Length: 397
Ligand SMILES: Cc1ncc(COP(=O)(O)O)c(C=O)c1O
Image (cartoon, rainbow, N blue to C red; front, top):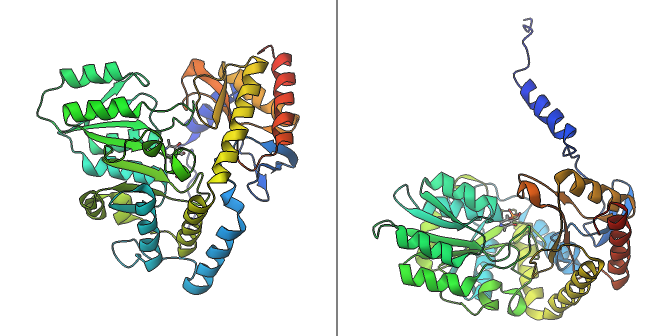
C-alpha cells in the first residue's frame, strides 16, 4: 500500500520554535555526563553545578545506592501494577510509615512524583462547587490540580495575607474552601507565610494545604519542612513533600489524617491509574529518611554554604530578591539577558540555568542558583568570582 503524501499538521510548532529562537529563548537540553554531583560535567564541560535540587548530595550517596541494589536483587526492577490493583508492595508501605513518623502525621501516601501528588490531591479533594484560594506563585502542579478539580480559582498576590483575607471575606459561606501555598517558592526561594495563613484558614474554616517540595530535607528539625520550621504542626491539613529533591530519589507524598490518605487511595487519579514506584526507589527513599534522622549535620552544612554564597552574590551587587532558602535567584529582568548570562557563566565553568517566561513573569527573568551541601568552599568562591566577572561584562552589576 502506498502512503499518500500529506502536509505535516504540526508545522505550527516549528514556527513557534523559530519565534522562540528569534527572541533568544530557544533552549537545548544540557546533558549531564556521569553523576548528579556538585562539581560535574555537562555537555563536555567541567562545571560547578548550581542547578541541581540534590540539596544534600543523597542522589549519589553510597547508602542509598546499596539499599536500592539490595531491593533490586530481592524484589526486581518494577512493581508491575498500579497501587490499587497488584502494585502495593510491603516496601511501599514501609516507606509511607517512615514518612508519617518523620512528618508527625497519622498517615502518608506516596505518589510517583511531587507533581502528581499535588495535582492528584487538589483535583481529588475539591469539586466544581468549591473554591481554591492560591498564592500567585504556587507551583504549576497546584494550578493544574485546581483546573482539573473545576473548583473556582481565586489567586492572591504573592504572600499577601491581607489580600487572601479579602478574598475569603467576599466569598459566600457555603462553598468548601482550600487555602494553599508553597512552603518554599521554587523560583524565588522565599517562604510562604504559614502562621498567618493557618490563622486565616482557621478563622474562615478552610482546608489548609502546603506544598513543601523544596522544604523537605532543608527546613525544620532534621529537614521536616516548613510546618516544623514555623511550629504549625497540627494546623496544616494537607502536606505535600517530594522525594525527588533533597531526598535525592523520585516521588512525592501527601501527609495528613488517616481519612485524607484513605480517601486519596480511592480518588486520586495518579494513584489509581499510574504504576507505582519500583521497589528500588522506595528502598532508597527509606535509606534517605534514615540519613535525615541520623545526620542533621548535612543539613547544617547546606545552610553554611547557603549563607556564604547568598552573601557573596549580594556583595557583588546582584538582585537576589527575597530568598530565604538555598534557592537564590539572580534576577536580571529581560529573558534574553538571563539566557546570555547563563550561557556565559557556563562557558566559564558555572552551570546556573536561565529561567524566563512562562516559568516566571516576563520582566522577572533570572538565573537560578541552588547550593548543595556537597559543594566545597572552593567551588562556591570560584562560582562567585565567575558571577562577578560575567555580571560586570554584561553590565548587570
Ligand atoms: C514547589 C514544587 N512543587 C512540586 C514540584 C514537583 O516535584 P517533583 O519534581 O517531585 O515532581 C516541584 C518541582 O519541580 C516544585 O518546585
